[in-house]
Image 1 (cartoon, helix red, strand yellow):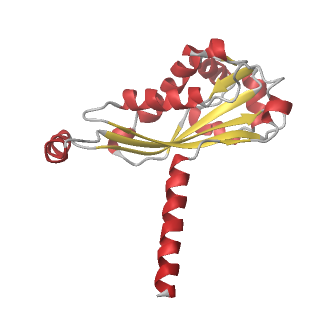
Image 2: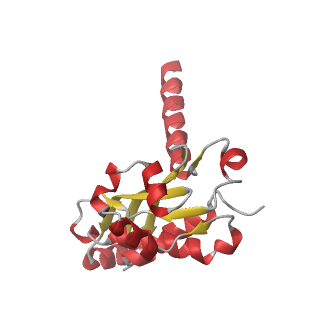
Length: 201
């Protein structure tokens, strides 16, 4: 009897950990507000990496980057930071001979000097899965609910001066019936904007 209770308690604990980890917010460096926020004024959003092997995910990382940028720019009056235009970031990287696939060869300090910013935001598309339309419709008919696409990505902010990680978040998002990569990207962008660590008091 006692063994059964212990097993049930263990399963309950594991379930709670799973639920909490799925709902967890971003990692935020403890001294970000006191040590970094006062001097961080400019942010560049680097080209996102794509680790997904899904055929339909070839352009999804581009949509993700643009979605995060759009939502941050839309609320930038609420922030203490200025978000550098994506076109400007890409132009400055290109002029310095840094191709998107070679960004990892540069340190945050070097990227900060190239882009003339205080921090860099990096993103990685980990998973992108878009279900076929037929399967979505069948699921919708059978269960009155369907998922069009599922995205898992990681977004982080690194200080260029100290090269310290300031903020890091693995975000999972699902879209409804026949959702596009752009719509899911915007939902992720809204989450990032909502939790942005450089907000005005």
